[in-house]
Image (cartoon, rainbow, N blue to C red; front, side, top):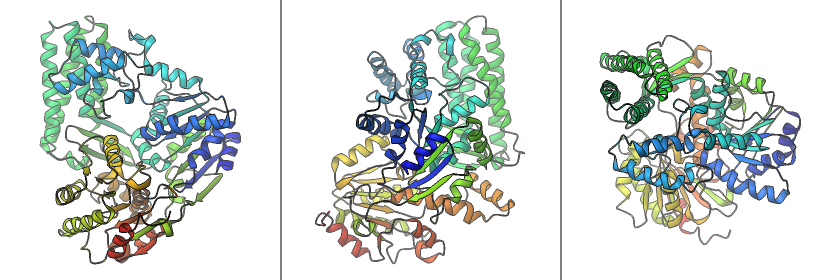
Length: 612
Protein backbone atom coordinates (compact mmCIF):
# COMPACT_ATOMS: atom_id res chain seq x y z
CA UNK A 1 0.00 0.00 0.00
CA UNK A 2 2.80 2.40 0.94
CA UNK A 3 4.67 1.63 -2.31
CA UNK A 4 1.53 2.29 -4.39
CA UNK A 5 0.87 5.59 -2.58
CA UNK A 6 4.54 6.60 -2.97
CA UNK A 7 4.09 6.18 -6.74
CA UNK A 8 0.99 8.47 -6.69
CA UNK A 9 2.80 11.13 -4.59
CA UNK A 10 5.73 11.08 -7.06
CA UNK A 11 3.86 10.92 -10.36
CA UNK A 12 0.16 11.68 -9.75
CA UNK A 13 -2.80 9.42 -10.58
CA UNK A 14 -5.51 7.79 -8.46
CA UNK A 15 -5.23 5.07 -5.85
CA UNK A 16 -8.06 3.34 -3.93
CA UNK A 17 -7.23 0.96 -1.05
CA UNK A 18 -9.52 -0.72 1.44
CA UNK A 19 -7.23 -1.44 4.37
CA UNK A 20 -8.67 -3.62 7.13
CA UNK A 21 -8.29 -2.69 10.81
CA UNK A 22 -4.72 -3.15 12.00
CA UNK A 23 -2.97 -2.94 8.60
CA UNK A 24 -1.28 0.34 9.58
CA UNK A 25 -2.91 2.30 6.76
CA UNK A 26 -2.16 5.63 8.50
CA UNK A 27 1.59 4.97 8.28
CA UNK A 28 1.17 3.61 4.73
CA UNK A 29 0.15 7.07 3.52
CA UNK A 30 2.07 9.25 6.03
CA UNK A 31 5.50 7.81 5.16
CA UNK A 32 5.30 8.58 1.40
CA UNK A 33 3.85 12.00 2.29
CA UNK A 34 6.85 12.78 4.51
CA UNK A 35 9.73 11.37 2.46
CA UNK A 36 8.87 13.05 -0.86
CA UNK A 37 9.50 16.75 -1.50
CA UNK A 38 5.86 17.40 -2.41
CA UNK A 39 3.02 19.30 -0.76
CA UNK A 40 0.46 16.80 0.61
CA UNK A 41 -2.97 17.46 2.10
CA UNK A 42 -4.46 14.68 4.24
CA UNK A 43 -8.20 14.83 4.74
CA UNK A 44 -9.89 12.81 7.50
CA UNK A 45 -13.52 11.97 8.22
CA UNK A 46 -13.77 13.68 11.60
CA UNK A 47 -12.12 16.28 13.83
CA UNK A 48 -11.27 13.52 16.36
CA UNK A 49 -9.29 11.58 13.75
CA UNK A 50 -7.69 14.83 12.55
CA UNK A 51 -6.38 15.51 16.06
CA UNK A 52 -5.21 11.93 16.61
CA UNK A 53 -3.30 12.05 13.33
CA UNK A 54 -1.72 15.43 13.97
CA UNK A 55 -0.94 15.14 17.67
CA UNK A 56 -0.10 11.42 17.93
CA UNK A 57 0.79 9.66 14.66
CA UNK A 58 2.57 12.47 12.78
CA UNK A 59 5.04 13.49 15.56
CA UNK A 60 6.05 9.84 16.07
CA UNK A 61 6.77 9.37 12.37
CA UNK A 62 8.52 12.71 11.87
CA UNK A 63 10.82 11.73 14.76
CA UNK A 64 11.42 8.19 13.45
CA UNK A 65 12.13 9.32 9.87
CA UNK A 66 14.17 12.31 11.05
CA UNK A 67 12.56 14.44 8.34
CA UNK A 68 12.36 18.15 9.00
CA UNK A 69 9.05 18.59 7.17
CA UNK A 70 6.73 21.40 8.23
CA UNK A 71 3.28 20.19 9.27
CA UNK A 72 0.06 22.07 10.01
CA UNK A 73 -3.43 21.34 11.32
CA UNK A 74 -6.26 23.26 9.65
CA UNK A 75 -9.93 23.10 10.66
CA UNK A 76 -13.05 24.90 9.48
CA UNK A 77 -13.54 28.44 10.77
CA UNK A 78 -16.23 27.44 13.31
CA UNK A 79 -13.48 25.71 15.33
CA UNK A 80 -11.49 28.88 15.97
CA UNK A 81 -12.09 31.62 18.50
CA UNK A 82 -13.13 34.96 16.97
CA UNK A 83 -11.89 37.57 19.47
CA UNK A 84 -13.95 40.33 17.84
CA UNK A 85 -17.22 38.44 18.33
CA UNK A 86 -16.22 37.32 21.84
CA UNK A 87 -15.58 40.93 22.91
CA UNK A 88 -18.82 42.13 21.32
CA UNK A 89 -20.85 39.50 23.14
CA UNK A 90 -19.11 40.01 26.47
CA UNK A 91 -19.95 43.73 26.22
CA UNK A 92 -23.52 43.28 24.91
CA UNK A 93 -24.74 39.80 25.81
CA UNK A 94 -28.08 39.41 24.03
CA UNK A 95 -29.14 36.51 26.22
CA UNK A 96 -30.39 35.80 29.69
CA UNK A 97 -29.34 32.14 29.37
CA UNK A 98 -27.11 31.34 32.43
CA UNK A 99 -25.36 28.54 30.45
CA UNK A 100 -24.22 30.97 27.76
CA UNK A 101 -23.12 33.53 30.38
CA UNK A 102 -21.06 30.90 32.23
CA UNK A 103 -19.53 29.54 29.00
CA UNK A 104 -18.68 33.07 27.77
CA UNK A 105 -16.63 33.59 30.95
CA UNK A 106 -14.78 30.29 30.31
CA UNK A 107 -13.99 31.26 26.71
CA UNK A 108 -12.87 34.76 27.80
CA UNK A 109 -10.36 33.13 30.19
CA UNK A 110 -9.24 30.72 27.43
CA UNK A 111 -8.69 33.73 25.11
CA UNK A 112 -5.98 35.07 27.43
CA UNK A 113 -4.04 31.77 27.37
CA UNK A 114 -4.36 30.27 23.86
CA UNK A 115 -1.75 30.40 21.11
CA UNK A 116 -3.87 28.74 18.37
CA UNK A 117 -7.43 29.84 19.24
CA UNK A 118 -8.59 26.23 18.65
CA UNK A 119 -11.79 25.94 20.71
CA UNK A 120 -11.27 22.16 21.07
CA UNK A 121 -8.57 23.09 23.63
CA UNK A 122 -10.98 25.14 25.74
CA UNK A 123 -11.68 22.92 28.76
CA UNK A 124 -15.38 22.59 29.60
CA UNK A 125 -16.64 23.70 26.17
CA UNK A 126 -18.06 20.72 24.28
CA UNK A 127 -18.52 20.63 20.49
CA UNK A 128 -22.26 21.30 20.82
CA UNK A 129 -21.91 24.07 23.46
CA UNK A 130 -24.52 26.84 23.21
CA UNK A 131 -21.84 29.53 23.36
CA UNK A 132 -20.05 28.55 20.13
CA UNK A 133 -22.06 30.72 17.68
CA UNK A 134 -21.28 33.73 19.91
CA UNK A 135 -17.50 33.22 19.93
CA UNK A 136 -16.71 31.85 16.44
CA UNK A 137 -17.38 33.27 13.00
CA UNK A 138 -19.11 31.88 9.91
CA UNK A 139 -18.43 32.68 6.25
CA UNK A 140 -21.62 34.78 6.46
CA UNK A 141 -20.67 37.00 9.40
CA UNK A 142 -16.85 37.23 9.13
CA UNK A 143 -15.75 40.83 8.46
CA UNK A 144 -12.50 39.76 6.75
CA UNK A 145 -9.94 42.55 6.31
CA UNK A 146 -12.40 45.08 7.74
CA UNK A 147 -12.30 43.35 11.13
CA UNK A 148 -10.51 45.42 13.81
CA UNK A 149 -8.87 42.17 15.06
CA UNK A 150 -7.77 41.03 11.56
CA UNK A 151 -4.02 41.11 12.37
CA UNK A 152 -4.52 38.74 15.33
CA UNK A 153 -7.18 36.53 13.67
CA UNK A 154 -6.64 32.85 14.60
CA UNK A 155 -8.23 31.41 11.45
CA UNK A 156 -5.99 33.69 9.34
CA UNK A 157 -2.90 32.56 11.27
CA UNK A 158 -3.88 28.88 10.86
CA UNK A 159 -4.34 29.36 7.09
CA UNK A 160 -1.00 31.15 6.73
CA UNK A 161 0.71 28.31 8.62
CA UNK A 162 -1.00 25.78 6.29
CA UNK A 163 0.17 27.71 3.20
CA UNK A 164 3.75 27.44 4.49
CA UNK A 165 3.58 23.74 5.51
CA UNK A 166 4.66 20.66 3.52
CA UNK A 167 1.93 18.47 4.98
CA UNK A 168 -1.48 19.76 6.11
CA UNK A 169 -4.12 17.75 7.99
CA UNK A 170 -7.71 18.86 7.22
CA UNK A 171 -11.14 17.16 7.22
CA UNK A 172 -13.55 16.33 4.37
CA UNK A 173 -15.95 19.15 5.26
CA UNK A 174 -13.16 21.72 4.89
CA UNK A 175 -12.04 20.21 1.56
CA UNK A 176 -15.51 20.60 0.04
CA UNK A 177 -16.14 23.99 1.65
CA UNK A 178 -12.92 25.10 -0.04
CA UNK A 179 -13.99 23.72 -3.43
CA UNK A 180 -17.35 25.51 -3.09
CA UNK A 181 -15.56 28.81 -2.35
CA UNK A 182 -13.15 28.33 -5.28
CA UNK A 183 -16.16 27.69 -7.56
CA UNK A 184 -17.63 31.05 -6.58
CA UNK A 185 -14.38 32.82 -7.51
CA UNK A 186 -13.33 33.85 -3.99
CA UNK A 187 -9.97 33.23 -2.32
CA UNK A 188 -9.45 29.68 -1.12
CA UNK A 189 -9.57 28.52 2.49
CA UNK A 190 -6.62 26.16 2.20
CA UNK A 191 -3.52 25.78 0.01
CA UNK A 192 -3.44 23.69 -3.15
CA UNK A 193 -1.37 20.51 -3.04
CA UNK A 194 0.45 17.99 -5.24
CA UNK A 195 -1.38 15.08 -3.58
CA UNK A 196 -4.64 14.72 -1.63
CA UNK A 197 -5.12 11.71 0.66
CA UNK A 198 -8.65 10.93 1.90
CA UNK A 199 -8.75 8.71 4.99
CA UNK A 200 -12.22 7.39 6.06
CA UNK A 201 -13.01 7.85 2.35
CA UNK A 202 -16.33 5.98 2.62
CA UNK A 203 -17.81 9.28 3.91
CA UNK A 204 -16.71 11.39 0.93
CA UNK A 205 -19.77 10.82 -1.28
CA UNK A 206 -22.29 11.90 1.35
CA UNK A 207 -20.31 14.99 2.41
CA UNK A 208 -19.79 15.98 -1.25
CA UNK A 209 -23.57 15.77 -1.83
CA UNK A 210 -24.16 18.26 1.00
CA UNK A 211 -21.67 20.77 -0.36
CA UNK A 212 -22.74 20.49 -4.00
CA UNK A 213 -26.33 21.16 -2.92
CA UNK A 214 -27.98 24.07 -1.14
CA UNK A 215 -29.55 24.35 2.29
CA UNK A 216 -31.09 26.94 4.59
CA UNK A 217 -31.74 26.43 8.29
CA UNK A 218 -33.53 28.27 11.08
CA UNK A 219 -30.18 28.06 12.95
CA UNK A 220 -28.55 30.30 10.30
CA UNK A 221 -31.48 32.70 10.55
CA UNK A 222 -31.24 32.75 14.37
CA UNK A 223 -27.50 33.50 14.15
CA UNK A 224 -28.27 36.39 11.78
CA UNK A 225 -30.82 37.84 14.22
CA UNK A 226 -28.31 37.54 17.10
CA UNK A 227 -25.53 39.21 15.08
CA UNK A 228 -27.72 42.18 14.09
CA UNK A 229 -29.04 42.48 17.65
CA UNK A 230 -25.48 42.94 18.97
CA UNK A 231 -24.87 45.78 16.46
CA UNK A 232 -28.25 47.30 17.39
CA UNK A 233 -27.46 47.22 21.14
CA UNK A 234 -23.89 48.51 20.79
CA UNK A 235 -24.16 51.08 17.96
CA UNK A 236 -27.77 52.34 17.70
CA UNK A 237 -29.92 51.45 20.72
CA UNK A 238 -32.23 54.38 19.83
CA UNK A 239 -33.28 52.64 16.57
CA UNK A 240 -36.31 51.02 18.25
CA UNK A 241 -37.90 49.91 14.99
CA UNK A 242 -34.87 47.70 14.31
CA UNK A 243 -35.31 46.02 17.73
CA UNK A 244 -39.02 45.37 17.06
CA UNK A 245 -38.30 44.03 13.54
CA UNK A 246 -35.70 41.59 14.94
CA UNK A 247 -38.16 40.35 17.58
CA UNK A 248 -40.81 39.82 14.91
CA UNK A 249 -38.40 37.88 12.70
CA UNK A 250 -37.16 35.77 15.66
CA UNK A 251 -40.78 34.86 16.51
CA UNK A 252 -41.59 33.84 12.92
CA UNK A 253 -38.40 31.70 12.78
CA UNK A 254 -39.44 29.90 16.01
CA UNK A 255 -42.97 29.45 14.61
CA UNK A 256 -41.57 27.91 11.42
CA UNK A 257 -39.80 25.24 13.50
CA UNK A 258 -42.97 24.59 15.54
CA UNK A 259 -45.19 23.78 12.51
CA UNK A 260 -43.04 20.67 11.90
CA UNK A 261 -44.01 19.02 15.22
CA UNK A 262 -41.88 18.04 18.19
CA UNK A 263 -39.57 15.17 17.23
CA UNK A 264 -36.46 15.15 15.08
CA UNK A 265 -37.29 13.72 11.65
CA UNK A 266 -36.57 13.77 7.94
CA UNK A 267 -39.25 14.31 5.33
CA UNK A 268 -39.99 14.98 1.67
CA UNK A 269 -39.94 18.75 1.11
CA UNK A 270 -42.22 18.53 -1.93
CA UNK A 271 -44.84 16.86 0.29
CA UNK A 272 -44.30 19.46 3.04
CA UNK A 273 -45.04 22.27 0.56
CA UNK A 274 -48.55 20.85 0.09
CA UNK A 275 -49.26 21.82 3.72
CA UNK A 276 -50.86 25.27 3.84
CA UNK A 277 -49.67 25.92 7.43
CA UNK A 278 -46.01 25.27 6.49
CA UNK A 279 -46.26 27.53 3.41
CA UNK A 280 -47.82 30.34 5.45
CA UNK A 281 -45.06 30.05 8.11
CA UNK A 282 -42.42 30.22 5.36
CA UNK A 283 -44.02 33.28 3.76
CA UNK A 284 -44.09 35.01 7.15
CA UNK A 285 -40.32 34.51 7.55
CA UNK A 286 -39.69 35.75 3.99
CA UNK A 287 -41.95 38.79 4.61
CA UNK A 288 -40.11 39.61 7.86
CA UNK A 289 -36.71 39.23 6.18
CA UNK A 290 -37.90 41.62 3.49
CA UNK A 291 -39.03 44.16 6.09
CA UNK A 292 -35.73 43.79 7.99
CA UNK A 293 -33.90 44.53 4.71
CA UNK A 294 -35.84 47.83 4.37
CA UNK A 295 -35.14 48.82 7.99
CA UNK A 296 -31.41 47.99 7.66
CA UNK A 297 -31.26 50.14 4.52
CA UNK A 298 -32.11 53.13 6.73
CA UNK A 299 -29.32 52.17 9.16
CA UNK A 300 -26.49 51.83 6.64
CA UNK A 301 -25.11 55.28 7.36
CA UNK A 302 -25.38 54.76 11.15
CA UNK A 303 -22.81 51.95 11.42
CA UNK A 304 -20.36 50.40 8.96
CA UNK A 305 -20.94 47.05 10.69
CA UNK A 306 -24.42 46.82 9.11
CA UNK A 307 -23.29 46.33 5.52
CA UNK A 308 -22.33 42.66 5.90
CA UNK A 309 -25.54 41.50 7.68
CA UNK A 310 -27.52 43.61 5.18
CA UNK A 311 -26.14 41.42 2.35
CA UNK A 312 -26.81 38.23 4.35
CA UNK A 313 -30.47 39.19 4.77
CA UNK A 314 -30.81 39.36 0.97
CA UNK A 315 -28.95 36.06 0.45
CA UNK A 316 -31.13 34.21 3.00
CA UNK A 317 -34.31 35.69 1.53
CA UNK A 318 -33.20 34.36 -1.88
CA UNK A 319 -32.56 30.88 -0.43
CA UNK A 320 -35.96 30.85 1.32
CA UNK A 321 -37.66 31.73 -1.98
CA UNK A 322 -35.58 29.07 -3.79
CA UNK A 323 -37.12 26.50 -1.42
CA UNK A 324 -40.41 26.87 -3.34
CA UNK A 325 -38.75 25.93 -6.64
CA UNK A 326 -38.81 22.11 -6.54
CA UNK A 327 -39.18 21.37 -10.25
CA UNK A 328 -35.52 20.63 -11.10
CA UNK A 329 -34.73 16.95 -11.70
CA UNK A 330 -31.59 15.18 -10.45
CA UNK A 331 -32.04 16.60 -6.93
CA UNK A 332 -33.63 15.45 -3.71
CA UNK A 333 -35.71 18.07 -1.91
CA UNK A 334 -35.94 17.16 1.75
CA UNK A 335 -36.09 18.66 5.22
CA UNK A 336 -34.64 17.67 8.55
CA UNK A 337 -35.74 18.73 12.02
CA UNK A 338 -33.78 18.56 15.26
CA UNK A 339 -35.11 19.50 18.68
CA UNK A 340 -34.43 23.19 18.03
CA UNK A 341 -33.99 23.72 14.27
CA UNK A 342 -35.33 22.86 10.84
CA UNK A 343 -33.15 22.70 7.70
CA UNK A 344 -34.36 22.58 4.10
CA UNK A 345 -31.99 20.74 1.73
CA UNK A 346 -31.66 20.61 -2.06
CA UNK A 347 -29.19 17.75 -2.63
CA UNK A 348 -27.80 16.41 -5.95
CA UNK A 349 -28.36 12.67 -6.34
CA UNK A 350 -25.13 11.98 -8.23
CA UNK A 351 -21.84 13.75 -7.46
CA UNK A 352 -19.56 11.63 -9.68
CA UNK A 353 -19.34 14.17 -12.55
CA UNK A 354 -18.72 17.13 -10.24
CA UNK A 355 -16.06 15.22 -8.29
CA UNK A 356 -14.38 14.03 -11.51
CA UNK A 357 -14.18 17.71 -12.55
CA UNK A 358 -12.48 18.64 -9.26
CA UNK A 359 -9.85 15.93 -9.74
CA UNK A 360 -9.23 17.10 -13.32
CA UNK A 361 -8.98 20.76 -12.32
CA UNK A 362 -6.50 20.24 -9.48
CA UNK A 363 -4.14 18.11 -11.63
CA UNK A 364 -3.02 16.46 -8.37
CA UNK A 365 -2.62 12.86 -7.24
CA UNK A 366 -5.55 11.42 -5.23
CA UNK A 367 -5.48 8.59 -2.67
CA UNK A 368 -8.65 7.13 -1.08
CA UNK A 369 -8.51 4.70 1.83
CA UNK A 370 -10.77 3.31 4.56
CA UNK A 371 -11.43 0.03 6.34
CA UNK A 372 -14.86 -0.08 4.64
CA UNK A 373 -14.98 0.66 0.90
CA UNK A 374 -15.85 -2.71 -0.64
CA UNK A 375 -19.18 -4.46 -1.01
CA UNK A 376 -19.01 -8.21 -1.66
CA UNK A 377 -15.21 -7.89 -1.95
CA UNK A 378 -15.44 -5.43 -4.86
CA UNK A 379 -14.66 -1.70 -5.03
CA UNK A 380 -16.89 -0.82 -8.04
CA UNK A 381 -19.63 0.76 -5.92
CA UNK A 382 -17.19 3.22 -4.30
CA UNK A 383 -15.32 4.04 -7.52
CA UNK A 384 -18.44 4.76 -9.56
CA UNK A 385 -20.04 6.88 -6.79
CA UNK A 386 -17.15 9.38 -7.11
CA UNK A 387 -16.41 8.92 -10.82
CA UNK A 388 -12.96 7.44 -10.10
CA UNK A 389 -10.75 5.54 -12.53
CA UNK A 390 -7.96 4.38 -10.22
CA UNK A 391 -4.50 3.50 -11.55
CA UNK A 392 -4.13 1.22 -8.52
CA UNK A 393 -6.82 -0.40 -6.40
CA UNK A 394 -6.58 -3.13 -3.81
CA UNK A 395 -8.30 -4.71 -0.81
CA UNK A 396 -5.78 -5.34 1.98
CA UNK A 397 -7.13 -7.71 4.61
CA UNK A 398 -6.70 -7.16 8.32
CA UNK A 399 -3.74 -9.06 9.86
CA UNK A 400 -5.87 -10.09 12.86
CA UNK A 401 -6.71 -13.76 13.42
CA UNK A 402 -10.50 -13.32 13.52
CA UNK A 403 -11.09 -17.09 13.68
CA UNK A 404 -9.39 -17.20 17.09
CA UNK A 405 -10.00 -13.66 18.32
CA UNK A 406 -13.72 -13.30 17.64
CA UNK A 407 -17.02 -15.12 17.57
CA UNK A 408 -20.02 -14.02 15.48
CA UNK A 409 -23.38 -15.05 16.94
CA UNK A 410 -26.76 -14.78 15.17
CA UNK A 411 -29.05 -15.95 18.00
CA UNK A 412 -31.90 -18.34 17.19
CA UNK A 413 -35.56 -17.85 18.20
CA UNK A 414 -35.61 -14.05 17.99
CA UNK A 415 -38.75 -12.31 16.70
CA UNK A 416 -38.71 -10.45 13.37
CA UNK A 417 -37.05 -7.02 13.55
CA UNK A 418 -40.37 -5.14 13.22
CA UNK A 419 -42.17 -7.28 15.82
CA UNK A 420 -43.31 -5.26 18.86
CA UNK A 421 -41.73 -7.92 21.11
CA UNK A 422 -38.28 -7.23 19.64
CA UNK A 423 -37.18 -4.56 22.20
CA UNK A 424 -38.18 -7.01 24.99
CA UNK A 425 -36.03 -9.74 23.38
CA UNK A 426 -33.12 -7.31 22.99
CA UNK A 427 -33.30 -6.46 26.70
CA UNK A 428 -33.16 -10.18 27.50
CA UNK A 429 -30.15 -10.78 25.22
CA UNK A 430 -28.42 -7.63 26.55
CA UNK A 431 -28.81 -8.65 30.22
CA UNK A 432 -27.31 -12.11 29.71
CA UNK A 433 -24.48 -10.72 27.54
CA UNK A 434 -23.62 -7.92 30.01
CA UNK A 435 -23.44 -10.42 32.90
CA UNK A 436 -21.25 -12.82 30.92
CA UNK A 437 -18.92 -10.05 29.71
CA UNK A 438 -18.88 -8.31 33.14
CA UNK A 439 -20.06 -5.08 31.50
CA UNK A 440 -17.59 -4.25 28.68
CA UNK A 441 -20.35 -4.10 26.05
CA UNK A 442 -21.38 -1.79 23.19
CA UNK A 443 -25.07 -1.96 22.22
CA UNK A 444 -25.48 -0.34 18.78
CA UNK A 445 -28.92 0.62 17.47
CA UNK A 446 -30.44 1.82 14.22
CA UNK A 447 -33.13 3.87 15.99
CA UNK A 448 -33.32 6.17 19.03
CA UNK A 449 -36.69 4.72 20.02
CA UNK A 450 -35.39 1.15 20.46
CA UNK A 451 -32.21 2.43 22.15
CA UNK A 452 -34.31 4.26 24.78
CA UNK A 453 -36.56 1.22 25.34
CA UNK A 454 -33.57 -1.07 25.88
CA UNK A 455 -31.91 1.52 28.16
CA UNK A 456 -35.05 1.57 30.34
CA UNK A 457 -34.96 -2.22 30.46
CA UNK A 458 -31.33 -2.64 31.50
CA UNK A 459 -30.21 0.54 33.30
CA UNK A 460 -31.59 -0.55 36.69
CA UNK A 461 -31.23 -4.29 36.11
CA UNK A 462 -27.44 -4.48 36.05
CA UNK A 463 -24.70 -3.70 38.55
CA UNK A 464 -22.43 -2.26 35.83
CA UNK A 465 -22.35 1.46 34.84
CA UNK A 466 -24.63 2.14 31.83
CA UNK A 467 -24.08 5.13 29.52
CA UNK A 468 -26.33 6.24 26.68
CA UNK A 469 -25.69 8.54 23.74
CA UNK A 470 -27.12 12.00 24.37
CA UNK A 471 -26.40 12.05 28.12
CA UNK A 472 -23.21 13.99 27.42
CA UNK A 473 -20.87 14.67 24.47
CA UNK A 474 -19.55 11.66 22.54
CA UNK A 475 -15.98 12.29 23.74
CA UNK A 476 -16.95 12.44 27.43
CA UNK A 477 -19.14 9.31 27.24
CA UNK A 478 -16.29 7.36 25.61
CA UNK A 479 -13.77 8.57 28.18
CA UNK A 480 -16.10 7.47 31.01
CA UNK A 481 -16.71 4.10 29.33
CA UNK A 482 -12.97 3.41 29.03
CA UNK A 483 -12.17 4.74 32.51
CA UNK A 484 -14.67 2.41 34.22
CA UNK A 485 -13.34 -0.62 32.35
CA UNK A 486 -16.57 -2.58 32.98
CA UNK A 487 -19.23 -0.26 31.56
CA UNK A 488 -22.06 -0.63 29.02
CA UNK A 489 -22.61 1.92 26.26
CA UNK A 490 -25.74 2.35 24.12
CA UNK A 491 -25.39 4.37 20.91
CA UNK A 492 -26.89 4.98 17.47
CA UNK A 493 -25.33 6.03 14.14
CA UNK A 494 -22.45 8.24 15.34
CA UNK A 495 -21.08 5.46 17.58
CA UNK A 496 -20.96 2.98 14.69
CA UNK A 497 -17.74 4.52 13.38
CA UNK A 498 -14.65 6.43 14.46
CA UNK A 499 -14.68 4.90 17.95
CA UNK A 500 -11.47 3.19 19.03
CA UNK A 501 -11.63 1.18 22.28
CA UNK A 502 -8.71 -1.21 22.56
CA UNK A 503 -8.00 -3.87 25.18
CA UNK A 504 -10.14 -5.16 28.01
CA UNK A 505 -12.71 -2.33 28.22
CA UNK A 506 -14.71 -3.79 25.29
CA UNK A 507 -15.45 -7.50 24.83
CA UNK A 508 -18.84 -7.56 23.13
CA UNK A 509 -20.69 -5.60 20.44
CA UNK A 510 -24.44 -6.21 20.06
CA UNK A 511 -26.15 -4.82 16.93
CA UNK A 512 -29.95 -4.66 17.02
CA UNK A 513 -30.56 -4.98 13.26
CA UNK A 514 -29.06 -4.52 9.80
CA UNK A 515 -28.51 -0.78 9.28
CA UNK A 516 -30.71 -0.21 6.25
CA UNK A 517 -31.65 3.45 5.87
CA UNK A 518 -35.33 3.92 6.70
CA UNK A 519 -37.34 3.33 3.47
CA UNK A 520 -39.24 6.59 4.00
CA UNK A 521 -36.00 8.63 4.15
CA UNK A 522 -36.53 11.25 1.41
CA UNK A 523 -32.92 11.27 0.20
CA UNK A 524 -32.90 7.47 -0.14
CA UNK A 525 -36.28 7.51 -1.93
CA UNK A 526 -35.02 10.07 -4.44
CA UNK A 527 -31.81 8.09 -5.09
CA UNK A 528 -33.79 4.88 -5.59
CA UNK A 529 -36.24 6.54 -7.98
CA UNK A 530 -33.28 7.97 -9.92
CA UNK A 531 -31.62 4.51 -10.09
CA UNK A 532 -34.88 3.03 -11.40
CA UNK A 533 -35.07 5.64 -14.17
CA UNK A 534 -31.46 4.83 -15.14
CA UNK A 535 -32.39 1.15 -15.52
CA UNK A 536 -30.53 0.07 -12.36
CA UNK A 537 -31.80 -2.12 -9.54
CA UNK A 538 -32.52 0.35 -6.64
CA UNK A 539 -32.15 -2.18 -3.81
CA UNK A 540 -28.93 -3.79 -5.11
CA UNK A 541 -27.30 -0.54 -6.25
CA UNK A 542 -28.34 1.87 -3.50
CA UNK A 543 -29.82 0.35 -0.33
CA UNK A 544 -27.71 -2.79 0.03
CA UNK A 545 -24.23 -1.24 -0.48
CA UNK A 546 -25.00 1.57 2.00
CA UNK A 547 -26.17 -0.92 4.64
CA UNK A 548 -23.19 -3.28 4.11
CA UNK A 549 -20.68 -0.45 4.62
CA UNK A 550 -22.55 0.81 7.72
CA UNK A 551 -22.58 -2.72 9.23
CA UNK A 552 -18.85 -3.16 8.53
CA UNK A 553 -18.22 0.10 10.40
CA UNK A 554 -20.21 -1.13 13.43
CA UNK A 555 -18.47 -4.51 13.43
CA UNK A 556 -15.09 -2.74 13.22
CA UNK A 557 -15.55 -1.45 16.79
CA UNK A 558 -14.90 -4.92 18.26
CA UNK A 559 -11.36 -6.03 17.37
CA UNK A 560 -8.91 -3.11 17.33
CA UNK A 561 -5.69 -4.90 18.27
CA UNK A 562 -3.88 -8.25 17.91
CA UNK A 563 -4.54 -8.97 21.59
CA UNK A 564 -8.28 -8.07 21.52
CA UNK A 565 -10.87 -10.80 21.89
CA UNK A 566 -14.60 -10.50 21.66
CA UNK A 567 -18.08 -11.52 20.56
CA UNK A 568 -20.23 -9.86 17.91
CA UNK A 569 -23.97 -10.49 18.23
CA UNK A 570 -26.31 -9.44 15.40
CA UNK A 571 -29.98 -9.77 16.38
CA UNK A 572 -31.44 -9.84 12.86
CA UNK A 573 -32.82 -13.08 11.37
CA UNK A 574 -32.61 -11.63 7.86
CA UNK A 575 -28.88 -12.48 7.80
CA UNK A 576 -29.99 -16.10 7.56
CA UNK A 577 -33.48 -15.93 6.03
CA UNK A 578 -32.89 -13.51 3.11
CA UNK A 579 -30.69 -14.06 0.07
CA UNK A 580 -28.95 -10.70 0.58
CA UNK A 581 -27.82 -11.95 4.02
CA UNK A 582 -24.95 -13.72 2.18
CA UNK A 583 -23.69 -10.36 0.85
CA UNK A 584 -23.49 -9.03 4.42
CA UNK A 585 -21.76 -12.11 5.78
CA UNK A 586 -19.24 -12.22 2.91
CA UNK A 587 -18.33 -8.59 3.64
CA UNK A 588 -17.61 -9.25 7.35
CA UNK A 589 -14.25 -10.45 8.77
CA UNK A 590 -13.91 -14.28 8.83
CA UNK A 591 -14.98 -14.84 12.47
CA UNK A 592 -15.99 -18.21 13.87
CA UNK A 593 -19.81 -18.37 13.62
CA UNK A 594 -22.56 -19.78 15.81
CA UNK A 595 -26.33 -19.52 16.22
CA UNK A 596 -26.14 -20.68 19.82
CA UNK A 597 -26.23 -17.75 22.26
CA UNK A 598 -25.00 -20.05 25.06
CA UNK A 599 -21.73 -20.57 23.14
CA UNK A 600 -21.29 -16.82 22.85
CA UNK A 601 -21.92 -16.36 26.59
CA UNK A 602 -19.37 -19.09 27.39
CA UNK A 603 -16.79 -17.41 25.12
CA UNK A 604 -17.37 -14.13 27.01
CA UNK A 605 -17.16 -15.79 30.46
CA UNK A 606 -13.82 -17.35 29.54
CA UNK A 607 -12.38 -14.38 27.67
CA UNK A 608 -9.94 -13.40 30.42
CA UNK A 609 -8.69 -16.99 30.61
CA UNK A 610 -8.00 -17.19 26.85
CA UNK A 611 -4.37 -17.05 25.96
CA UNK A 612 -3.54 -13.93 23.96
